[in-house]
Image 1 (tube, each protein chain N blue to C red):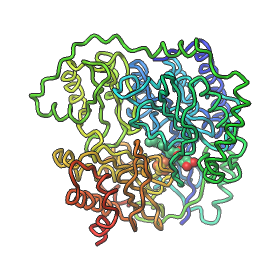
Image 2: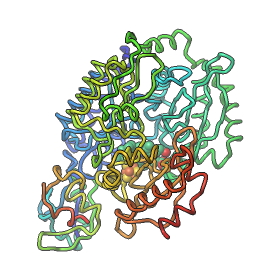
Image 3: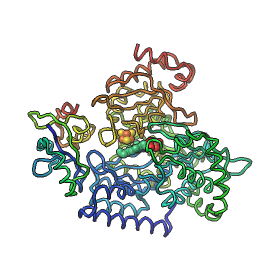
Image 4: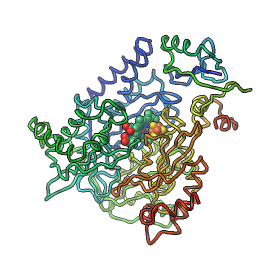
Length: 98
Length: 542
Ligand code: HEM
Ligand code: SF4
């Protein structure tokens, strides 16, 4: 599956395109299929999200899992500060990333 | 410490106001990110993996307790309660909101701080020896010169859009604690027949093409220094490779045309620049130097009581001789075993500020090794300082040992990264947690970068680690034999890379080889240089 992601204009937080808006939770990310480019351009025009780009991901039971480690770290937060990640103290988070 | 005059303050204040307006327009959607990006970068605001990152300049790594407390306040109020001290003696905040940025800069400006020249193709924040003004081996205090260069370079109209970023380091000791020759320009202040001047090295750097700066001039009189540097920059500005970002640094220019040709060009340009009268009059130099007058030393020369063994270890490892009898230089390690190199919490930053105020004539330094220095501590106070540091988990006695690792933010934070740096640092430090073992290994500088940009100085590590992306998987290359000190050298890749645990094992094997082969009081680096790579390779890849 294909996801559209970027960083929120105000907070810089990683955001995921949900189909009708943006969420900081990768679980909410929608498969943009063939429409990634078109949504990307429209959203760029809206100027709410910085530098959006399209990534590959795999659907899993817990939601989409980005294909590249960089986007998995973006999805979760720094692996060295589990107190600051989006799934705090989730012991499985490390495995999910690596 | 230097204190802003009304010009300095007005410039910084005006900049804050200008950036506030730019931010407002960006948030209102009046600017695209492409339009805004160069503006925010000029104010130290990057966009990293998880948020905006603000890099705050700490000119030549020197700050007072009021400024240090402000750094803590910013971390507490606008960030997530910590900051990251960097190899360029600055601090970075990792979780900044765009709408807070102008307020942060405004608060910083109240203590004479800013984020100018922490990004972009300009002359960046000047770096220097963290022991400046206190070092037993310095010929003069380099800070007045660093300050002069700061004033000269700040908003220098000709050098605001250089072909690429430009980093200058100034030292004044034969011992190089600032990786001077790995800068675009490295200055070593020296005296010749009583006259003060500088050896000028140009064209060093790390990054993807590491180079050691060749000596371009063995002695430039202090009176000519600014003109000479102006000439160095002009030649670069004219001929630097603007066509190719990977070849745009001055090191490539000098490498391509040769040091001799560059030196000649600079000489010609200098003859012209010198007529322009940009070197400051003596009175201005004296005005600046007066800010860095020695503090009011008053302590008797008493040796501290060494009966507490933990204290004694810390004294031996982290406390360095001072030029003033009765005083010492205290290094505060930001490298707790298993911690994140260079990170400090707001509470810790406050503790360090308090200690500086109480025991170090109100001054602190940030080191390029991502530690903090209290430069003027009376020996009679060392025990009290150590106690306070220990209570704040800041008393690790590992300066220059294998766990005193330089590590860049890597893939945990940095959008340019290929691999994570911090977890590798944590694993190595934990593997060598035993202090006796570390001390037995002696000075061993281990440096880690998460990509080829080399922010973590891996080229200059006795052991260097470079994270690479191997088909989407983190992989680590090992280099041996680098040094950022006066015996400067660039490390060599030893062979195929490793995964995260593999690289920790390989480092451990290398230390075993060293222990088996070392002679006398050789450091790891000395043994490696004497015996070469083979025995290490055999043990590691065997
Ligand atoms: C996280 C955001 C950062 C970004 C985007 C960044 C970017 C870069 C880039 C692109 C280079 C290569 C320049 C070149 O070769 O022309 C570089 C070099 C360097 N950076 Fe960073 N860096 C970051 C963080 C840091 C940190 C945290 C430190 C200190 C710990 C640091 C210190 C340095 C140093 C010392 C160099 C090598 C010296 C040289 O310029 O040759 N940077 N950085
Ligand atoms: S070396 Fe690479 S990964 Fe590390 S901070 Fe610099 S740019 Fe980022």
